[in-house]
Length: 442
Image 1 (tube, rainbow, N blue to C red):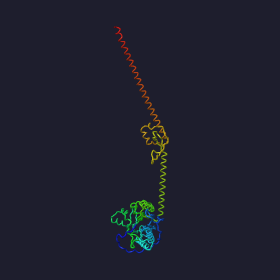
Image 2 (image 1 turned 90 degrees about the horizontal axis):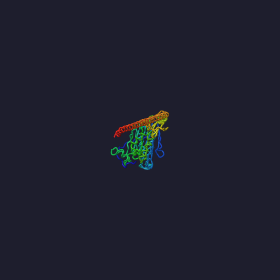
Image 3 (image 1 turned 90 degrees about the vertical axis):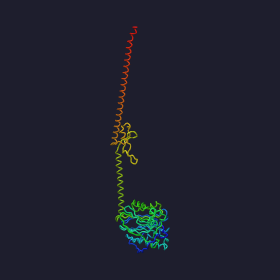
Image 4 (image 1 turned 60 degrees about the vertical axis):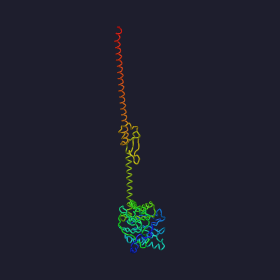
């Protein structure tokens, strides 16, 4: 990120708030989010949080700093070049750790952000860091059902309630002003060449002021604080989907960071996720959820084992007759498959030809003819043998009858032919006898 060369719009100078004083019970927190401490997760009575900071895939160092000091959480995105940006964000986090309220008082939280601005300017002038270094700041304090928010720059605070994600902060950036004016869309703003120009930041103006307000939060709400390394790479719709589908705050922080890296990781990425829990025993609830999950796993495993046992029993106690490559086979199991795996095996082959059986029986064999057991299957096979033998015997008897009838007909025909021949001979002899006396008289 970088500051514009001149202010884009004049503003009315506001009276300075009284300087905040350290809140009771707040101790300075070591700067987290640096090299070897880029993940911080934990819980308190009503809150559960997770966080991750990553240098990204392009930058050589991480200028982001973040703070998890329940009920205070913050993300600061540094700018100003090597060393300067991370110094500025570290100073901002340190100042917030010391001066932020322990209750949801947005005016005091806003004052703490403005004091961080003064501390950065003074440090630059004294030689700590560089002139022109600065950072953004997005900070929240959650107290019971209220959340105080203080904000400067283009880091963001999102609130997800009932599965719906809403951005509650307004970017102090050039492209956000274009969006407000209706000149570009939010999607166009994410890829606009001037998207890194911010119009308000810590370290740029002694009279800088922070936006601050208070919101109501409820049990089950999830809050996301992030640098623009996430919001400039991942659209809000995807942030919502990931936030909804992530079981824990740390899961959400990890998944959102990964999404930014997969989208290119052009900037440092820092994400803090906070869940509002329902009572004062967050850890007990977490352990209870783990136990419930374990119970479900055991129950599902038991049901799976029971299903396998029932299936195995059905397979072992089921028998049927089927077509085994043209002959009748005896099978144990079910005449079906699961994922291409047959639920049966061939127990015994037989000599019964399927083609010798009636057409209806052949069709039934294709589907499988259920039997009570192996002995019942053998009895059915024997009945098929008897049926086929009977059919063959009947066919043989019919053939014999046909042959006998044919022989008799042939015999009768021969007899008739012989009788006709004899009659013809007798007639011829009588005719010859009659003609003879006439010859002698002449």
